[in-house]
Image 1 (cartoon, helix red, strand yellow):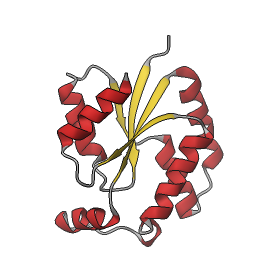
Image 2 (cartoon, rainbow, N blue to C red; image 1 turned 30 degrees about the horizontal axis):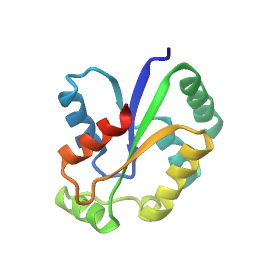
Image 3 (cartoon, one colour; image 1 turned 90 degrees about the vertical axis):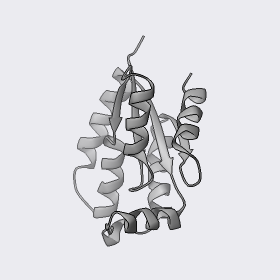
Image 4 (tube, rainbow, N blue to C red; image 1 turned 180 degrees about the vertical axis):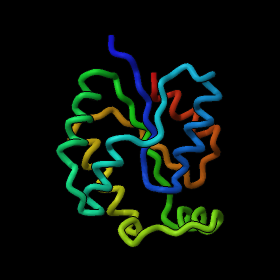
Length: 139
């Protein structure tokens, strides 16, 4: 049986880190949990026209064959993302402003590599509601 790794992925300001931290506390740090990994790297390869795609693809293949990976794919309404950015006085580079396109890229890679993922919309859900949805679908 492969060891399970839970990875939180998604566009900036969708609540990945907040939800990951909450998940860890609620599960008493019982799982190997990561905040972004190779899927984000592949998406950013496309967005920023970098040239390391084959490197990240090889890492992803090693992860997929070695571990039972579950991606918690966090999404949020574009206006909510913009509000969250304003609240922390941050802006996104031009390459990251088309949220819909970025979501398309994430889904492209998740589906292409047939990675098990759970989509969590953090737009109007409480953190506890998001956690409960993850736990329902995780098992």
